[in-house]
Image 1 (cartoon, rainbow, N blue to C red):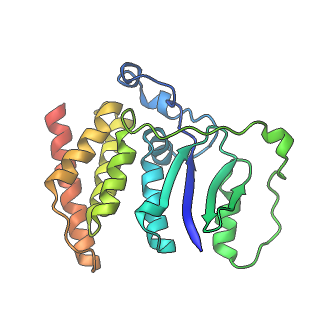
Image 2 (cartoon, helix red, strand yellow):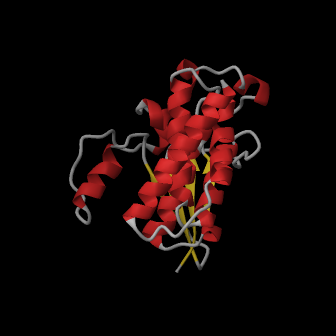
Length: 221
């Protein structure tokens, strides 16, 4: 009876930045996440919204939902982590203060729910909750990930590989932040997807995508 699954994204540190401001950001800027404390690669993915595209792809496979049933919205407070809308219109949300401890614990112990020492939820302390639409123009990396998911086959592997290479180059300060989606898009254009029905096919797509992404980055330098 599920109609939609809605995922939330914090919007990262550049949620309100203009295109011109995005052109000048540094790795140090991108690593200052407003609500989450994560590793460098995932923090950059949050800044580009690549992480949310990957989560939509994951949700497609984990829950057997079409991409038309999957949405993402910006939620700066990072209190609501997902919402499920049912056929009757009712919506259930998963809420909590920003920490990966709870989802990791539940993934390891499902279906049990074990006691944990995380901060108890307090709706008053959580404060007002706001939502904004995804801005595909300023953050095209999300749009490209959804495109890869819809294409299917090895396209999501190509997207992931190109993103990893581009993010690595940005952290090494050999690629500008705004060039990350360009590298991903041109890699997707260059790598024709094939059925991802074997580990060999996925590995081959991953290797090709990484090689093409690295070549593109060298051309941009």
